[in-house]
Image 1 (tube, rainbow, N blue to C red):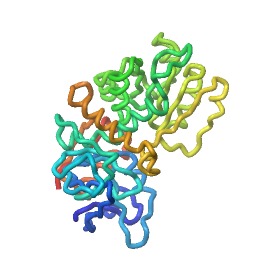
Image 2: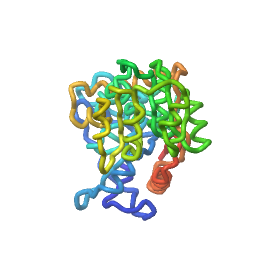
Image 3: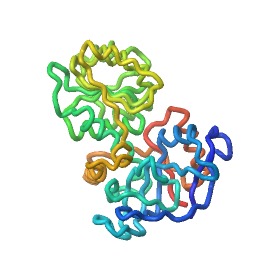
Length: 337
């Protein structure tokens, strides 16, 4: 089958950083479905792994943790899907990814795609929606108030893929005031259009801007990038006994400033459930079903902002290059073979 892989970490402008290759068709585990991939989206996780991982000698790593496609076959213990179903999912980091014509994925982390979206529009959602959902409801527990804190969420990086999903989910499923950060006029407009109550500039001191809003100290903060640069500021402005979450990978993180206010720090990694086959692994499929219902009822929308026609190495190199620039709004997708 056709696939796109790499066999050594190279700069994205190198023609061999991602290669068109042929691979055997996946074998199915009992709980797996085999999906003919119709569209994928590219995430910072793809870029990080490509730039740092060295596959075994003679082997290729196939990236891709967002896809939408059509079920072509099912394992003998599959209960919820049939051949012909249109599905979407994020997959897991410890199995071959979606940069392939066919992908095997555990049915517990899959859902039928939103009926109102194209494959490409749907492929933009899974990883970021699951990440945002788990951060808000499993890590920050935003439904449990912080005594004396403003019922507000400060979101660092509101215009990225995860931020775009978090704004929508917070506004549709909670009564939180959402304070998103964005530095450019176009990214600020994007956050406002998605429903953020306030948009502030993360390149300027945060505490002063939040104080000017007159709503008090936020109970919750969610940092999607450069957390090492913001944690001290967050410790100063989040309400005592508040909760902070992050999803990025700081080389070094000084958590000492959190002690005085008894602030809690939560790390979210959406691959934890499928990687470790946790007892609640199927919750990711449930989340995607709930997201699909929100989309189809018009309450949230896809975060796709750019689509490239053709899933191949050249186009994926372009997509990775765009992600590496660090100024992406929403999500970039590729569709068709």
